[in-house]
Length: 537
Image 1 (cartoon, rainbow, N blue to C red):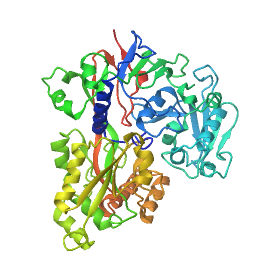
Image 2 (cartoon, helix red, strand yellow; image 1 turned 135 degrees about the horizontal axis):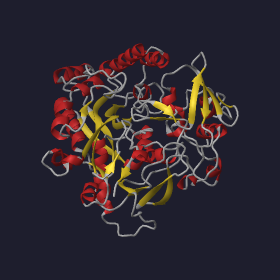
Image 3 (cartoon, rainbow, N blue to C red; image 1 turned 90 degrees about the vertical axis):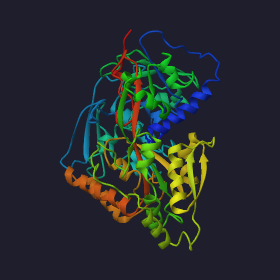
Image 4 (cartoon, one colour; image 1 turned 30 degrees about the vertical axis):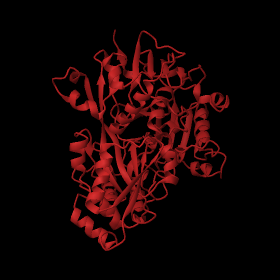
């Protein structure tokens, strides 16, 4: 979740996120106020971060908020360190002979942070609250839509989700529209987490004092300064190893804070990466690298000229040398994306090359479409996140190639980064930057969620009946190898034939971790598993 769209919008590649941290750091240097809450001086993990936009599981759309929510709340199922779906509040489950009806058996004695018991009725309430149009969730339609009746409730045509039935305090029966291999994975998303009804009813800003069920509870939060989590001693699974996690929102540049021993972990910006990668550097032994299931790409507005023409989209894809940008500008810190499905995920095809650079063919395609010398002038407006005028060198290198190789006049328009994804649907121009981090390890979360006709995350408006048909087949295919082949076929159509977007790169997380910190890892979904972390004296 995605900040990426999310979830999991989950946006920007790790490199660009780190560049954003640079800007945050420069602002924070001006702060002189003293936080009203203090950082504990023992058994604490110190991290650098920024304020979440919400701690409401039904409303979180970007990675920053989801990272906190994952620590404070929980659901029926979760992912383990190998990205397998495992029991969480649900102790077990089974399906009927149609594989479309799930019966979940909840652990007995699970409590909210205040000690109140969690029952099956709490899950029914939480999901129906998420699907209530009055709530305004932007994620319920993506992650709960397989449940019978969820769409009807989202559309305001039902007062409850017909496919969710409570059978006693600890049994929940869920009926989905068709058997789908990825359904359980969707239930590991924040929008499917359980919330306390009394907590929600306490006021509009209830989530500033959330009563969750996760391994940590919110101990204090001062906007712009500090957020403090404390171990939940009532947690129903293995309790967190560290008592406190303090997220510092001020103090300066993250890497500098790390070197001054003010924080235990930091991401590494492109400016520091080269020296840290040097084996002779004193920080090199503290370097940890984690592959991520995310992608950055430039999307095309396919519903208006010039990018409603496949030939124009293909030309703009074939005019770019991504390998050169990744090597010379990004110092090979990310992996070139030929397609959409990330390495390591089911359906990834290492031999797929997408649309490779071929400037002559690109020019010919433009001429055939009526653009270029002797044709219509080609002016392109690109929408990017930000408001300061700063554009990353990597994106400048991409856009420059359109001007150099195609003769296109390229204009950049920025939307404020904090509201970028909220405004992008209505305010996108011809081309737009987009990033997505996986909410669950399945190609459906990329090929379907981002590019199916009518999907809320399909910002470019791409639509093709044959493509949608492949997704429909893959969704219900029980044979994993056949399902994988269908998704690969869909990716070929999306990228090589229809050029719905220009894939740029798959992200990689580079971290520095203090030697006294054990168990700190980043999952491929982009979240730290803080409950497994310990800090020695």
